Image 1 (cartoon, rainbow, N blue to C red):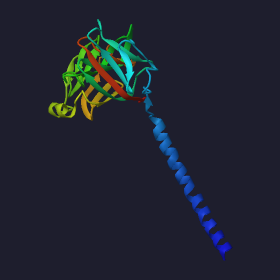
Image 2 (image 1 turned 90 degrees about the vertical axis):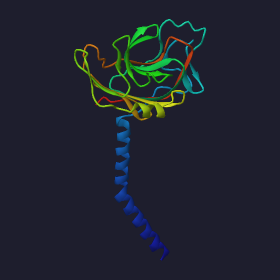
Image 3 (image 1 turned 180 degrees about the vertical axis):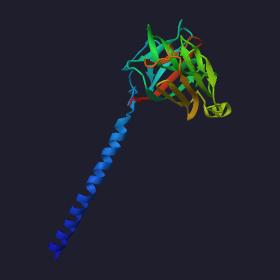
Image 4 (image 1 turned 60 degrees about the vertical axis):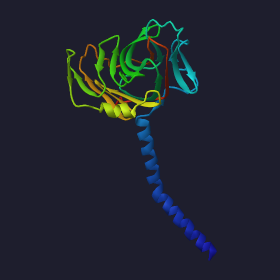
Length: 242
């Protein structure tokens, strides 16, 4: 009887395996394909500045963060940048930042002007909450969008405003730049959005073809001015190219 029972159990298990294995396999392949379709890539190993270049007197790794620091003795004549060795075109970037004093930002689709100077789109950051979240063009058109604005720029550079993207009072309550904040920057074609702690700070369509960059470098900024510290971590990017 035992041998007959063993044969019966084996037959049931074998049949179930044949029936459901393809379904499980198909599910795994589907999940793998979805993940690989828009794979996030880490840009910082948490230990070194491998893959980045900048003034070693200004940039270092401190307690698992990329840290930019100036002091009273720092003789900074121009804004200086830590430059990633890759390129950005259509992408989504996410990172965490915090800042003590001063001004900073995340450059994207920008130009390397030499000696760690950069020009182009900048997702702004500052310690006083005046500029945090705006879209600025370093060495270019200046402020392209204030925080909380939906903007369209036409071929001649004229701007028109749409609906508000976030409430300023809500932003002020939910964002403390001295603590870790989440920044998400998305650029697809001529459409750029920026979000901080889940609040959309910029939604802009840039149709000024002779000015609107479609690709370029990624960099982090230290600004001229009083002593400051800015830190970044958990920096990841994924391509939106189809």
